[in-house]
Length: 416
Image (tube, rainbow, N blue to C red; front, top):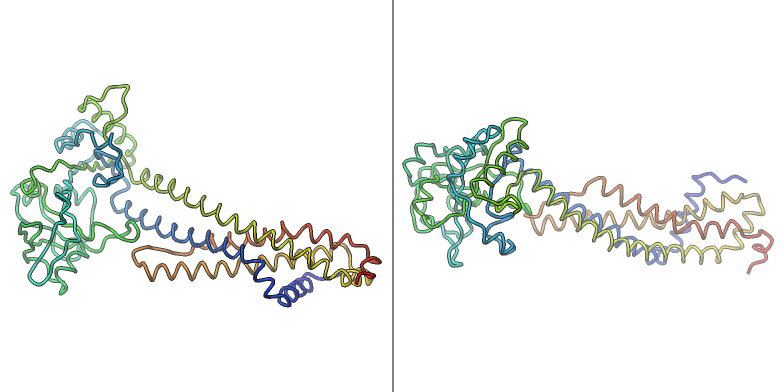
């Protein structure tokens, strides 16, 4: 008697359904494992996409020069980097002159929070402390182009004259001017008044779904210097000529080491980075998170797999007489093996499907509860979760299936 695959699948489904409560408890570990790894993968995929878009907007051909690696205002900056000499605005002209692979260089002045007191932006009827202030040279808009929602950007003439004008990030403008008419109005920022020249369109990408540029007040560079003469937190953005980013990177590094008199045997006392390097650093961090989640889910899958093996061994014992009858009427060993393997796969596959459904619901729920955290369920994660759950069923179902197939039909028929 030859059993078709369809018949085996039907018998496997019937066996699992007839003991559904026991089956549900058996695959609980698999459900937890698959839910964990797919949910973490979904959240990290969305987060990475936002960061990739963010740095693409900053310019794929740009090289960024900072005093420290990472956020200069973060307490996580190593003390050794904090003690470095500041980057100077004059470096921009030197790099532009001495680096043939560099097309242009812009300077940004990042204004920190003083004394732990937040800065405020206010107009008649509205006020907020959710903002940052920066000053930039006018060529920043060609090196790092940004779309405008309304108005215009400041010009080189505005910058040279030190005019009290400002550009607002999209969310900041919406907070201060809910009617959308910010251009031409005066806004008070950190105690000084500026005329709003323009409002940027909503920035793309960001960290955890938020982009700090959407709450930034951007001033002409000279205006910012006159308002904050004590601040020396400069960032340079060098735009490489087409196809010459690595050459530009090497040239900038050599020039900065020379003008800062960095000894040949000492590491750089400044930080150079590109979009690709920052994304790679993020991937290294998320790779560790994924490995931890895989380890946690692996424990769940191991527990679930052992549970499946145990329940299948119990099933073989409970159905010994049935196995004997099937062998007596012509079932081959391969038919018995496939029957029990299909049952094991049906158990773990069901657990995998339930885990995937839970992970999708969890991802959607997190997206609703925390809109700033981008999340999407990648198809690869779903397929991998399903494949892993089926693989666990095959791996842990082989022994019980082989044990069932090796039963002697005569002894099996006598079994009570």
